[in-house]
Amino acid sequence: MKGRLYGVGVGPGDPELLTLKALRIIKSVAVIAYPAPEEGASFARAIVARWLSANEREVALLFPMRPGPASDAVYERAADALAAELDRGLDVACLCEGDPLFYGTFGRLLPRLATRYEIEIVPGVSSLGAASAAAALPLVQGEETLLVIPATLGEKALSARLAAADAALIMKLGRHLEKVRRVLSSLSLLERAIYIERASLEEGRVLPFSAVDFGDAPYFSMALIASREHH
Amino acid sequence: MKGRLYGVGVGPGDPELLTLKALRIIKSVAVIAYPAPEEGASFARAIVARWLSANEREVALLFPMRPGPASDAVYERAADALAAELDRGLDVACLCEGDPLFYGTFGRLLPRLATRYEIEIVPGVSSLGAASAAAALPLVQGEETLLVIPATLGEKALSARLAAADAALIMKLGRHLEKVRRVLSSLSLLERAIYIERASLEEGRVLPFSAVDFGDAPYFSMALIASREHH
Image (cartoon, rainbow over all chains, first blue to last red; front, side, top):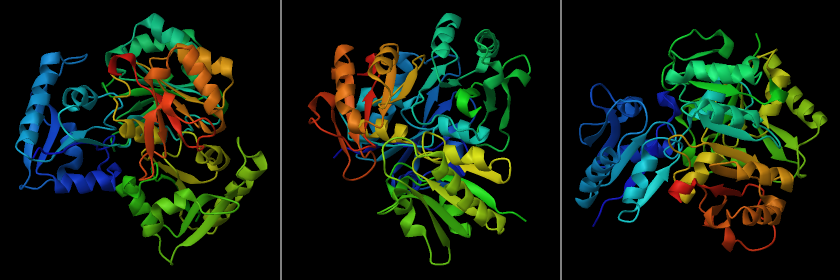
């Protein structure tokens, strides 16, 4: 009998933003898997570290810490590592920062395993919710639309899409801070934009985008543009 | 001394999708407030009912069950009811279905109270996460954008915005099912669209949008259009 795979959202960083369901599953499975850099600690594991016990087997799925998506070979290796545990009949919780299917690694692993194993997704608090909570700004209401857009897109694409949006969340600012600043400025959106770094964590910061220092932002920083009505 | 107001996301419906933080706050405050229809039970209250005790004061914020946003007077009355508790020095947890600032009532109450009271937002699992988990489809990845759009918009606006989207979540289908079907069909998106009703609940349903019966969908049903790559 094959094991069951859980894609478990562990929330944006504050360990208290774990759901009761995620906690139950983490405590019940034989194997805990998580993405981890080749050197250093796994952020997803750190979020739930207080709940892990020595009885559980841990499987670190190693990802190179380069910008951009990992190679197909890296995802294949990670999927194979999960499959090996499942084939032994062990249930596996794969920890996912934020929500499992809202950007992130698990969305790449799911199609590689979905036909062979029983998989359950446990949704988590996403960076979207964490960002609007940190800014304490209503994100969208009523008939407004929300655009979620990665800062890694080209300047033209960013500009065209943001111009048509009511409210927007720009993800993964990282090395793209200056490009995003240019785009927001040209669209007269700079004053409405809020910069959010490490939302939900104690060291988190929220400030007007226009007040952010030049230079790089952490990869997981975001810009939130609340709808005109609520700014 | 004034009380502190918490906008507490209680998740999409499954009581186990409550966060540890939401649970701690619900157990610690003197007053629990929640939106409720003029007749019948509050969905937000039902999600956390097992954690409520007779020691807490409960304040139902009554909203008429008509389609569309409530009137300003209704929001003012709800904000006043919260203010009355806070002015007595009582901490209040205002329960919010899903995430407090992702569509929904609390976004309308926040600006009415933010200058007078200390307010903390506790983000929750949103209907966005619940929908992609129910469909078990990666929602967005890499450089893809996500559009969240209410079905209440006009046919032209829906069509123009969906035509430009990579992935999309169409909220609040309700009485707009047929209009959305026409739009998706004209954009050749019908085969990629998944219909999701009462995501995260046991009575929830996930089916191809093209297989949905004619007639009305529940207000909280959604359509998910995963990006072309992952369909």
